[in-house]
Image (cartoon, rainbow, N blue to C red; front, side, top):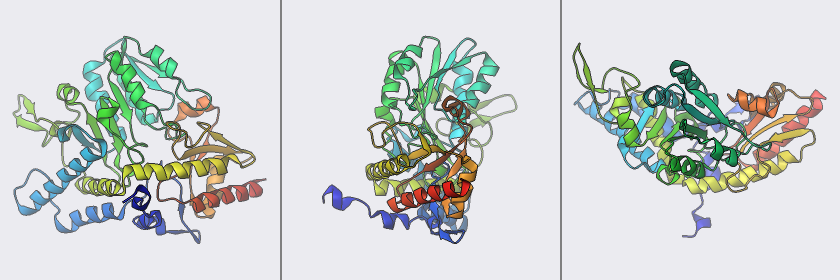
Length: 416
């Protein structure tokens, strides 16, 4: 079978997302806010529902039938995630409640042990607050500091600056794989190689990448990779931290409680091995099972096929948005340029506040995000107080992009 005939039928794929069938303000929903949270695979919804209906039980703790069924489904999701990111071993895949918790875990456990007074954490101007604030809190506790790799005026990371800033006092280099605000795709493999050559561990925030492109943590050469379930078309309250075993084994637990221990007395405790050491308490079992189902649905579609589909959508959207008079588009100049832009578009429209524009588009059934996108430092760098953001996924269509353009033009007329 050739590659063309093997490509998914994207309209049939769209039917796998019940939320896309909504009618909003009398019009079919056009959902262009997937960078915020993605619509959910029906497979994920059904998997979570089945857990609650058929085998509600706690994981790991019971030998009865329902407990074993829950544990098997919970651990099967871990195997699916191993396949998604090509993790070397399943024990390195840690469940969390999302990217934010994953990075807080690292700031507490990795940072608390390996980052001391006078050390530096290197970040970039493209970071989401989730990859800024936990490190600020760590710096306040231990006396470390943050340095920031700048971007160019077109929203691309300054690689020469990054290399200069990877000095001996840097103890962690953290950076996003894809900017949630600009769609910039960072050359993460090159960044990891720069850091590795200097013995500096790396953290990649993969929230915007894991759902949309091939992620191979072994090929990337990173030390930690994190992403969130609700952006991979799965339930909210789920997330993943992947880390190299040598770091995870050396890190202390983040939370204490049930299931993360081997033995407890009132004098002391000994901790379980990976991954249990970092998974204290009863987890979001239904959510994780749904996450596993969503990941399997992604794998069935084919990550490379998804990436190609979204590259076409990104190029088309870039061309259409760039042609609108009075619209300023931020980020890399060329959609579809290898290694540069994902289908995430932040823009401003002359004489239209981003919130007003989003509200007028909602009247047309079009959902976009407006504001600072949890990236205040980046917005300050761009010199804007807020932008509108349209973010696409493989379930979107060219016709929906056309409708977005028509909606922007209509809003311009109203606001004029």
